[in-house]
Image (spheres, rainbow, N blue to C red):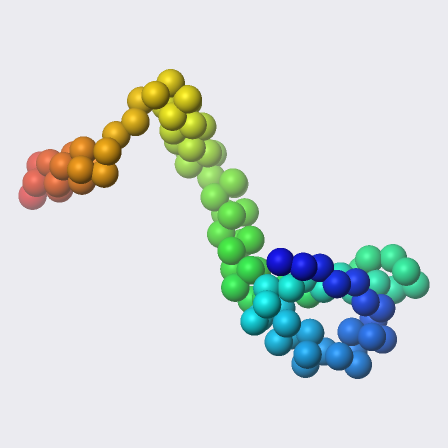
Amino acid sequence: MSTTTLSITEARNNLLDLIRKTKDLMERVIITKNGKPEAVLISYDEYESWLETLEITQDSNLMKEIAKAKEDIKAGRLFSYEEVLKSLKKKKAAHK
């Protein structure tokens, strides 16, 4: 993933090509005004991913679960795929 920096004028003159590059090549474009960054052009998929990440980081319960999972990994408390699947099946059966 690369980043290109362009002036507003350059970006305006190449907008369709820049949109294609952000979509197809996941390129990021920093748009400047008088040499100072003003905006960033990214693909819609990347934008959606950033929104999802932001939503996750704002969920305090989920962040606590992630922190606990990291602690479990560091402490070697790991489960195989089969163990997790078996546990999920037991929980599902208990809720019937």
